[in-house]
Length: 425
Image (cartoon, rainbow, N blue to C red; front, side, top):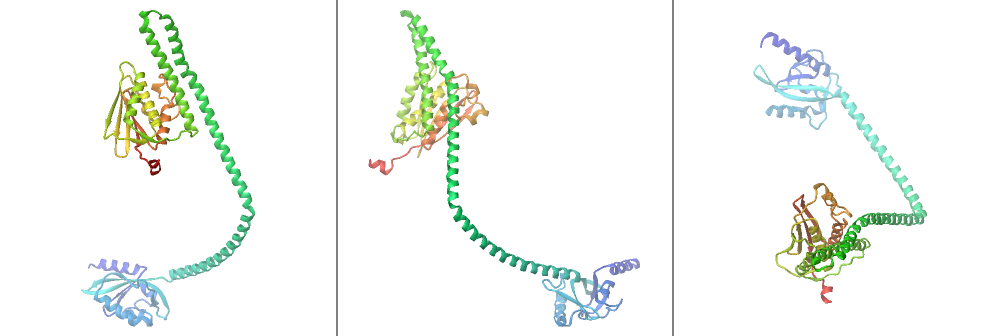
């Protein structure tokens, strides 16, 4: 090693704030920096040739000698005294807390132990102070807890007295709150009914005027067509009158159904129903409303069976959906019955104007009319009523629609079965 390297090593060695002690396998100190001399109370050079055990309290010197021999057998870098308090011994006999890290170094081809030593007296004082503070806090917390328990017991007794005193008052408050809630519900119900009436008057003034005007106009024209050659013209206007009457009937039926549903007067009357036969009857009835180039087609899938449900509700649902299909499409309307294991699926498909994407979320709301259907007669109540009917039968309704291509409504009902009580009847 060059001369300047030795000087640099010595400068670094002596400049370290940690105590550095180098010893051989017999525990003799061969090197020690200035910090270690100051730490253990020796003049410079006073530690050389001392034994490591000279720097350890007498009560643990024998154990330390055995620890040193074990370390020499398996010398690896380690932290001494893990989980234990270590103490050094000053020249004057004063013990002080330390931390030691061990490593190995080769000096002149001989393995030596290098000990890095830090005095931790200040840290120990802080730790002891913290420990005392913690013990004081625990004692204070325990005392506080006892006080809180006493106070809580007193409060419990006070609360018990207050509860007895306020029992009647709470009952009065409860009755008052219930009365207020009932009043709020009644007011909200009345507000909804007033809104319904207002919208009904507004809508009815428009929806009734159109068919009435049609009937009045057709009747006036029929009076003029009194010759045999004008039979076709009379028949055309008679059909218009029938259609207008049918539209008025539909409007009245919608409001009658809505009124019954709102008042909870719709009761389920289940019976054995041949839905395929019912569908054919509805189609026959609704075919009178189709235009010359329209027809209603029925398709049946799966194994047909008798369902146990309410035929009137099913009938109303089918009429409403098919009526919409006829109204909003100039083409045919398809009805598909699919008999599944426990469910009857009914699909009503038209190929008409479809529903704008941004308006689909409003389809089942009362009085809702899509923008592309405002010029077509209707109350905007049909689908809202259908949804309520479907829910009464514990079914589901959904739809898919593409603008200018058509709409398919899908209704699923449980096929149902008699209960033991109903079977006995």
